[in-house]
Length: 159
Image (cartoon, one colour):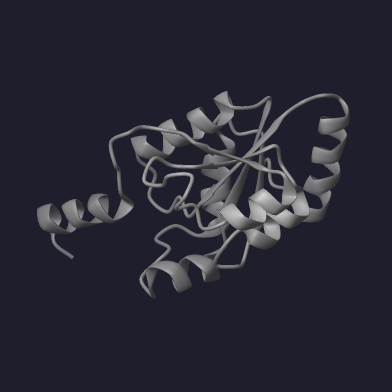
């Protein structure tokens, strides 16, 4: 079952959950080629709150961030794969390069980032602070990278 919602609908759901006393974690990324680092990151985000909302970069956003060769898997299929994870409660797709706008709309309890960040290096730290959203650094301390997975595949099997 696809857990995909529009941001405005998700904002209403989050407001209702918060009224019930529930906490909401928001995590985001491209999730182009899934690896264990993604799983550990999302599990860590879910462990912070009652509900995990995952922000997924749109295909156009991934291209802007990663280059013309990406994404390798389109946003609909990435959303379907991520929806299969039981620890992901909802997904939203965003077109922007950062999640500032999405944070303004959703207003989760936590904004979760991976261990390649510190609370001081999170790009959205100012908007999170302004909105009263707590920053949480979660996941595996080992840095896993989609770029490294792609590099390994190219080295091993060629282009």
